Amino acid sequence: MRFRTVGFDLDGTLLDTSRDLGVALNHALAAIDRPPVPQAEVMNLIGGGSGLMLRRALALTGGEAGVDFEALRQILLAHYEANIAAHTALYPGGAAMLDALDARGVKIAMVTNKPQHLAVKLLGELGLLDRFVCVIGGGAGFPLKPAPDALHAMVERSGGGAAAYVGDTTFDTGAAQAAGLPCVAVSFGFNDKPVGELGAAAVIDHFDALLPALAEL
Image (cartoon, rainbow, N blue to C red; front, side, top):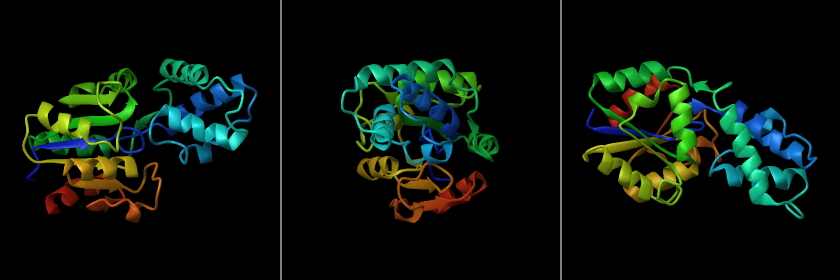
């Protein structure tokens, strides 16, 4: 393992947040008398932050005309924050994978487009926050992925050295490429393209395969 730091995206990579996000999204849509988005379709809307998720949902349910978008986004976020860990959990193999990285002395970091305070709250409620040397989310002073700035900060805050990143969308692979970091894509996440087209250095179907994949990079 040549990497001193391994960074993770949050939604759709380390944690399956789709059900809690879907509930909050449909709560917001109900506030303007829009039909709910079926849970099976919610995964296709996630990626790029809450605003983009909401815009995609509005496009599916009648458009944005006459909608106070920012007020509606705040309704979504308030409901989500109040119910942030009701159904969210690590993807299968996630806990063992984090243990294995820790046992090898690898620093574990988080860079997500989720608002910073929500990322910290969610990881805290799941008892995972102490595993991370740094958590960088939206609103922490850096542009959202696919801009590379937060990944550069992740490496700096983790003490420098070789780093890799793990994600599930073009936001993640694009940020990693721009930051000069190899990226591993997970096929079980909220992929916004077929996983083989994301441009990752490696693709895994289960967290059991992450350490072997990193060892080969």
